[in-house]
Length: 115
Image (tube, rainbow, N blue to C red; front, top):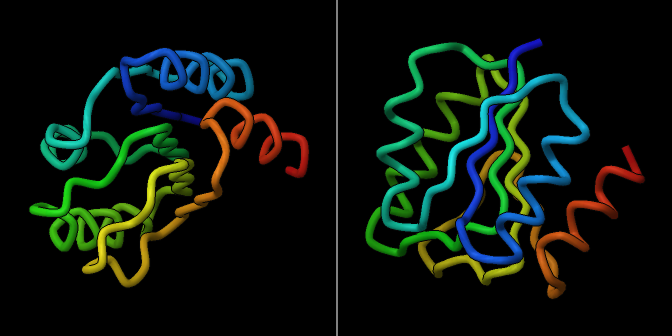
């Protein structure tokens, strides 16, 4: 199974990415940020079985485009978007989005234990 992880380059993003990487079989890992995430997802040429996004707040300016892109990707990929930042008001739903008020590594560890 092919997997890709997009994670933030700060402390909780690095820890979250490492936890996600330990749960998947040889995933590709990319460090990104809220403003660059949509472009990074648009650059995905391969149909990945798993797409994991960790600790990346959603940029309000591109939130609707991001929602559309994640909908497209969810047709052939299992998406898990694990974050602790609040959603912008414009976002109605994001495929695979899991948000709670905790640090991202704690969210990811809890999610992996449940699954």
